[in-house]
Length: 64
Image (cartoon, rainbow, N blue to C red; front, side, top):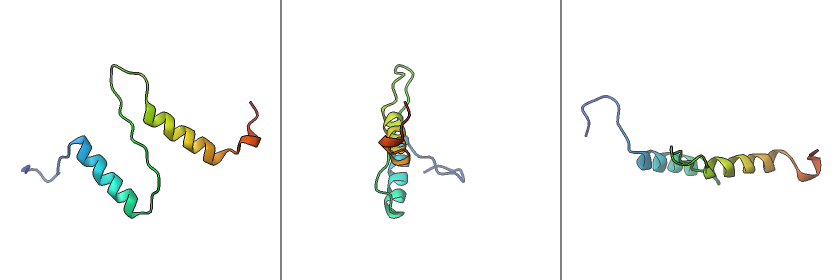
C-alpha cells in the first residue's frame, strides 16, 4: 500500500478496472491499445477507428 492519497495502479490493473466499469455501464465492445517505441503499428487504435467508421458511415455513402 502507498502512503499517498492517490492509489497507484499498474497498467493491467487499471485496464481491468476500466473494463469492469464499461461492463457495468452496459458496454458491449471495447478496445485496448498499447503503444511502444519499437513499433509504429497500433492495432487497438486501428480496430477502434475501423469500428467507429463502420458505425458512422454506411458503405453505400462512401464517396471514395
